[in-house]
Structures are given as C-alpha cells and as structure tokens.
Amino acid sequence: MIVPLAGARLGYLEISWLFFSGGLIFWVVLLTLVMNRLMLHDPLPGKMVPTLMILVAPPAVAFTAWLRLSGEVGPFGHFLLSAAYVFALLVATQVAKFRNMPFALSWWALSFPLAALTIASFGYAEAAGSSAHLMIGSGLLALLVAVVAGLILRTGLAIGKGQICLPE
Image 1 (cartoon, rainbow, N blue to C red):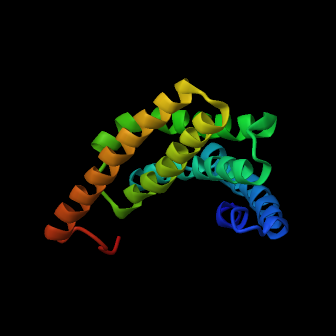
Image 2: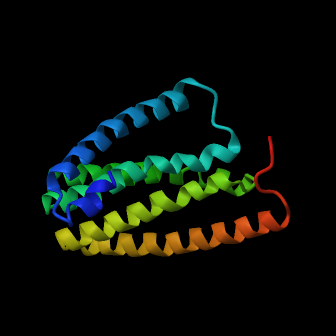
C-alpha cells in the first residue's frame, strides 16, 4: 500500500497499481487471520491489545494511495476511509483496558495507524472540500501528538526503570 504513495507522484503508475492491488489482497488475508484469532481463540494477552490498532492502517493507507492513483475520492475511497474509521472506533472501545495495562513496546503500535488515519482524513478534507473531515483530521492530529508524546515519555520511564526488553 505504501509504494503508490510515492510511485504515483513520481509517475510510476503501473507499478503503483500493482502494489496497491497486492496490498489490498494481503489486507483481506490479514483481516481474516486477525478476526479468526479474535473470535475463535483465547483473548489477546494484555500487552498485545494495543496492536489491534494495526487494523486501522491498511484501509487508511489504502485510501491515501487510492487518492494518489485515482485523483478523486470516489465510492471505493469512501469505503476505505469509512473502514479505517470503523476499525479506529472498535479500538477506541478498548481504551479503558489500556489504563490498567502495564506499558510495553507493543504500545507503539498505536502511532503509525493513528498517523495514517490522520493523513487520510486531511486528504479526504482536501479532495472533497469537507470541513467536517478537516475537523476530524485536526482532532486526530492533536490526539496523535499526545499519543506520541506519551509513548516517548512512557518508553523513557521504562528504560530508566529497566523494564524494557525483558524476557517473559
């Protein structure tokens, strides 16, 4: 999904479409595996719960790639961005659990998908002239800054206490 972000701007449209298509196929596979794990197996260990945020990244990055490749939002773009929002809302229901969990490096899984969703929201706002998505993007940007600052702080504190990279 990432190749078309640069490839389309550089004029490599065919290879960008190839990677975009492959990325979509692998997103469906990843989604199937994750849903199978969540529904049919033991719950995720506590420190792995933040990694659920990774479900937001594929549709958010795919939306930005779609925008670069097609030049317009279109129905499929709406689908991709809406899917990213749905996954983000599903993860947001787990925020209460985050407060009671000890910090682990897996918490960094919150940063990239949140950044991808922020960029996608701003991209939609620009392409569609949507002030609502501009506000959503601005809110997500503020949240992203707070999350990354918190992750840096928590990582620094954990390093100082010798609580990082310990065997289980």
